[in-house]
Length: 279
Length: 293
Image (cartoon, rainbow over all chains, first blue to last red; front, side, top):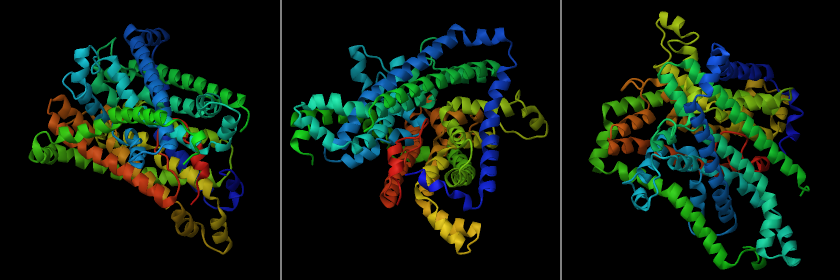
């Protein structure tokens, strides 16, 4: 276990040096730059701040960011669970390759993901040409944003659920079967409660990643104010207009809202874990 | 294989596998194919012309230079942070790990924005520096700073769980036998973490070269001067030079595939699953606890 080895650490040298370097670097690169968000927002009066963050365009961007990220994380929760299940439980040719490629969205630069998905789903694209005659427009609509966010969040649920599935005690399933449970009952009553917390963790990670995403979305979104403009893009637009204070105010509220939401989801996951009998 | 009563009927297995694979093909594999098909739209000649274009070469040079500055700094930080956190007990350890993860929870655009607030023309210290002729924003230092910020936690995050799982027995033995602090570090500790460090460095380099949002804010998109590879992809795409855009994008895609291959190799060599870095809480703690060589 991880904890056991660290207790006796005090005989090792280098605490002062490594800690000093760590704190200095952290302060210079992360903490001081991030604190400018508060400093800059403080230059606004309360009225200016309130008008910026409650402007219809800002509210529309917040709403779209949270809605699209939530939908994408939800799609990933369902399909990620399925992919993790298939990869852990069944055999098929090329399984190792498929397993390795699941991480692609973590490794692929977001700008590449953006142009690829747009080419794929545009009206004359590989898939878009079959979807659009049927009235399904993906590229340059909010649906396109959900598609891009689904792509970049795809590995999270798969990678959080896989180890839990691998460690499940096979005897528990055997006991359920010997007591007459059907396979579906065993899954719903025995397996699902075990893997639900991991699924929720993966959902939260995918959701958090999606909220801040910029590169893959701007190509496919169409970027129309009030309709398909995500919050990071609105911040970018304000910066390009040299409205630094406005950009910071929008960013501050967005950051606080995301952190708040993630805290709530994490608390829910902890509650659920606590309510389960220890395995 | 599992006994029959502990798995699903054949038909169910078949359908579930089919649906999962269809999802992955649609969302992962076909997009990957798109890159290379579109890149070769104008033949091998067009592909090479796009990659060898002077502006593209300037972007490649800037990207490599940025990575060459960012990666050693973040690697040094990662080793130092992992040493302090994994080898010692102190108050506020959880707070420190949370703060190290912070850049992952911040949108890339906001990551770039904080440096504009500091060093921009209307920033806190920007005007002072500019009057002395030092440009940070719309220049290399800004691109480097934004890239350091977004790749900040990568190496530390690979090394902290690895060092924690390994313990200190060998180091303590070496110190007892009279080895010095640095000697112990270079001869004992560094070899113990070499695979994790290698993977962290590869990941950091790949992310540094692929970063788009944060760099986009601070770069100013000056052609041939402050354009990195991802920004060059964007410019070409927006100018409807699709084949050229995908040709340059294919370089980044190859880089991503190489990262995945190295991940596989490191997992195979070290016998532990490594974590591709991602925002938010530590991924798959069960895997890390199983760690060890």
